[in-house]
Length: 142
Image 1 (cartoon, rainbow, N blue to C red):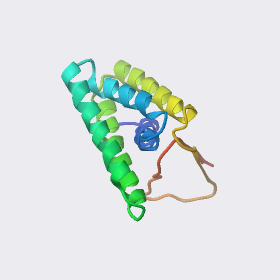
Image 2 (cartoon, rainbow, N blue to C red):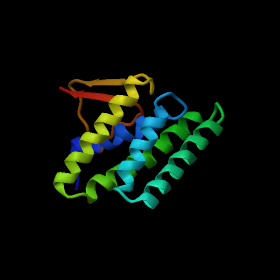
Image 3 (cartoon, one colour):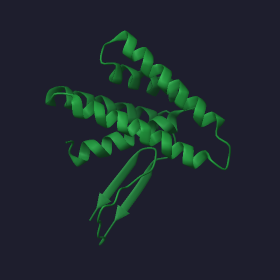
């Protein structure tokens, strides 16, 4: 089972993928995520590129009424894929993959992958809750 920090990183990664689609950040994000998930296997990396391209096509095809639902669904798909990757890797590789993912998220944000999201929670009680969104997220729990 992954620690909360890695789960949050996977969530931010899924959101960053969705935010980057259709922007200047897309090519870098697309190739970096495919490389990570492909784990050095050319055929696997090619399959990931195809999945990423389908994601971009679905996002572009979404009409105004469904765009938020589609974005949320696609972010969840990629969050799950990233969680599975991080969970399957041995500890040393997991830390390297986490660092690569963090760098991709930061690069996408710097390249115009969308505005960051900032949430502050103070004096709150959380029970069976989740923080969802897309883009780079910074959550502070006081």
